Image 1: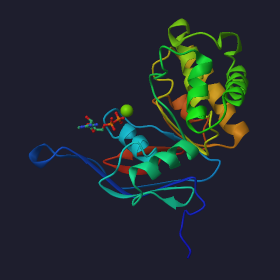
Image 2: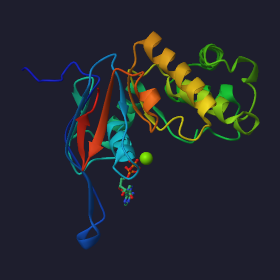
Image 3: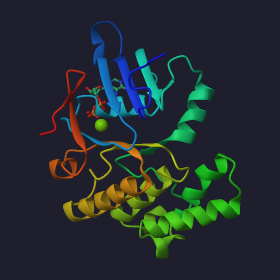
Length: 232
Ligand code: ADP
Ligand code: MG
């Protein structure tokens, strides 16, 4: 069977998402389609309220669409039960939020160890990988600090490291630098960019920053639920 987009890291097909019911119903996504090829880094630039987070959460299997399908590495998820979706998400997808969402009572190192141990990696190896990744993200000297003892840029670098701790194939980021000052934002983005390139990850990154978007392979926007390529 020849299925277009089958080799893609992410293939969103005919997605539909409506919030609420009756006269209060709000259809955010309708017949939404998007393909991200393996190794591609795509920027999602669109005004607030257009459905970026809804699209990213659906792509990340964090939310179930009302219709349509999300293929991860060619695998259909529409008919999967919650346990299978969670298992697939843990092995293939990394997610970065605008606010770091690190666990406040754990150190940076522990925040990276926990998702690995949930997947069955033993403590020593999880710690080793956590320290390597945090070194790479230039958090090395702060591995034993808790989130509240880190700057905003450091917190986001830890959150990015955590997202890739289980070596996903797809990284989804929802305005990952939206909460940082311009200098810190561009520094964090550069680190993220290098990480994505060096690991061959595929990525979909929502941002309001056109300068950052221009550094990616392609830019798409959302217009009444439709994904439109606006790469110049
Ligand atoms: P963006 O990330 O581009 O700002 P969102 O995906 O967060 O957009 O939201 C798109 C629209 O859907 C907005 O109008 C928002 O108010 C609405 N929305 C998002 N989540 C919910 C929800 N859980 N219930 C009702 N409406 C929602
Ligand atoms: Mg959003």
